[in-house]
Length: 590
Image 1 (cartoon, rainbow, N blue to C red):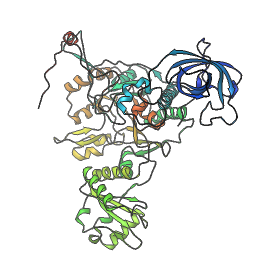
Image 2 (tube, rainbow, N blue to C red):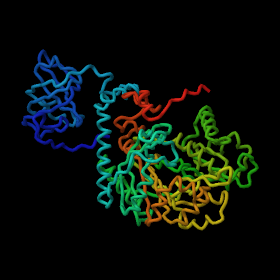
Image 3 (cartoon, rainbow, N blue to C red):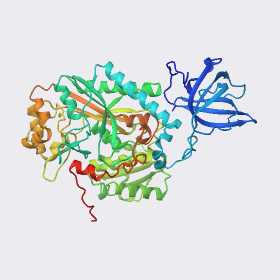
Image 4 (cartoon, rainbow, N blue to C red):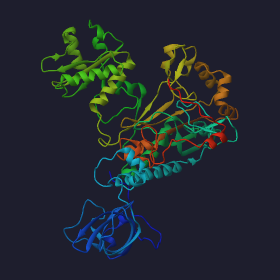
């Protein structure tokens, strides 16, 4: 995709009159001055040369008499007159390809050494080299486009939230350490030796305090930090839209965020996305084997447990049996099928059954253990046709969904740039994700998540697996298989909060120690409230067609968490440690 672009309005300046990428046919005859970098130089005869001058908006061709001393990446100011390119030399692939700047005078503002890697073409450059010289990498068309998409999206989000009555409020970066599910980055206090601040994993508690404070619609483009393992969609530092509102329902929050995201997509691509559907967590797991389903392709899971309810095949005597039909997949090689079986086992399945659908029969190593009626019913249930491949897993419901969900992605997930943007809300998540060995429920969210109103009474006297049936008023926004963000209706009633704390084994003293300042605030009048946060880096990466959020962040970390540009993380001087009252212990060799 191309970057969002509209002709830039420059204030009067002695340095330049226009951005290079803004020049068009309507500027023919105008005297202009552009500033930027020499993208390339092409000699034309003994004296004449063509310079492509690049800035953040694009590049324009400049015709220069005598340019032997100019080199790539020199910083220049070029003055001249816009004119049409000679007939037959237009470049339709270039936004400025119908014009050029002639009668040029060039002023070299800064000379440059040859860059450490080419900025044009599709030459693959080692990521560490790119990040070590990120200031050069940022000049590339790809990075300029991605940063423009990011700026357009954030600007649209801010406008959409303001238009819906939200107030932008900044929350602190130096806070007390709170349990958020990931490790905190901690900051030692010089004035209080032996004590530490934490950097926020999210503004969660502060935005709820804003609700108590009467800021009934809060938002923030928030910087958050989590000390966790990095991957394609995760960095130590990330940016999110953080929002909270009082006196609203879950549906209203979904509408607020849908409007903000829709505005961001339109600003970045020129088109509003279609309607955002909604699917329950249970249905998402049943049909797609994932709570962040990629809706761009089929290969849905089919429950065939009833087909084998009376089977004599021991492997299918399981609480749940599900299948995936792979259209025209029957010609898969045995090595490919063995590879899929190995993957299924690594993901937790006891095994994987495969079946080829032929004109008159189903062939499989296990076909001899199944009755003709079972095979016929399986074919009907999966709507299998000649030439298809069936993949089956039998296990617990959760394991069966999980394994087939991963197989579905392995077999059908398209590249990030294909299939358009398919948003969906996933709602009605479980309140608890599992039961610990000591019989206590493990929360699926933070402990201030409101139970579903129809399930609150289930909390009374429920134990063990019965608690896993309790739904929450929480919701995720998913785009093309990426979880963009999560939110929930919050608990604001003391009686419900005490019941949740009790189920989680959190004593009154522990609750006060962990969440005291929020619980104390709630004593002074907490309105009903709900909120949401989504990752701007993830959204922008998908809008820009990037597989990794590093490509839409100006100065990211590597996969190992290092910053090749600045050398961080690195040691600090002994004097700094002494001032902070810190001492480094020898590293364990165990």
